[in-house]
Image 1: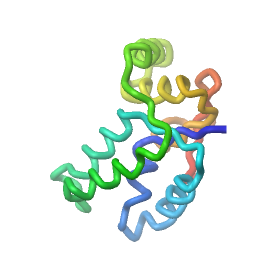
Image 2: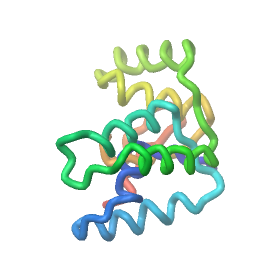
Image 3: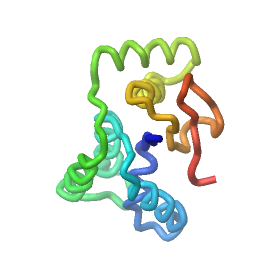
Length: 136
């Protein structure tokens, strides 16, 4: 069973904030699995969030690039017209932001059964994709 990792899982896995210690351990453990999936959108969001000026633990561009490249070992979902169409339909049908809907659509595209995120409601289901907050 493949699991889709959202941006917040990647961010916690590299956080050095003492308050994130438990979440870092959970996120790092998930990434040891061989069946992780991420989308190009997730990698773009990670880069943006990790390097933004207002972030207290802002990462250098080179560090963020290094992390993004290390996650190329996961199955990657490209931004495609089909993912966009599915995301727009999910956004419309479930009143989701387009960004959340695109992540769900990417998870569905690859047949993932679980979407690991803290940004949606734990236990919520979108077709065959179950939302799980691994940090509860």
